[in-house]
Amino acid sequence: MTDSFVIIVPARAGSTRLPNKPMAMINGRTVISRVIDLANTSNASNIYIATDSGEIKDHCESCGANVVMTSSDHISGMDRIAEAAKKLDLPNDVPIINLHGDEPFMPVQIINQLPM
Image 1 (cartoon, helix red, strand yellow):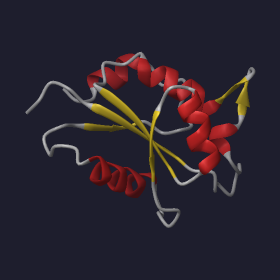
Image 2 (image 1 turned 135 degrees about the horizontal axis):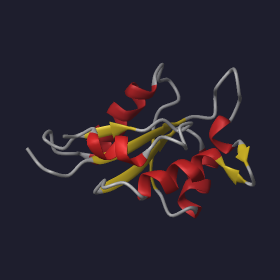
Image 3 (image 1 turned 90 degrees about the horizontal axis):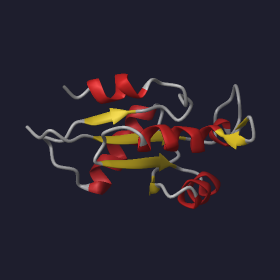
Image 4 (image 1 turned 45 degrees about the vertical axis):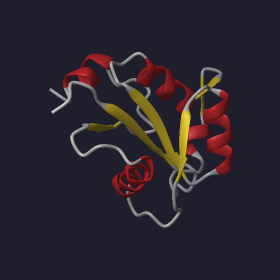
């Protein structure tokens, strides 16, 4: 087992309740940019955004994030994370934290405690 962990953030534009939710603005900044900042303050060895949206991809890359393009056919964020992990060829012993793309206010202390 390794001491490091990665964060994969599933982010899709196709929400029916709030379309393109990751790009929604909170006090002048997008939700996903705030999630990226949160993830960057954690102890994660790597952070990836898993998305099926070119707009989200471009925006996240402009925020300095690593992006993995995934299928638009997934029914859950976990399915999107599984595809991204496979594409990244992550080792089986590296824990993956699922940080939702709409959780910009998750306490970083909780994120850092999860892989223990």
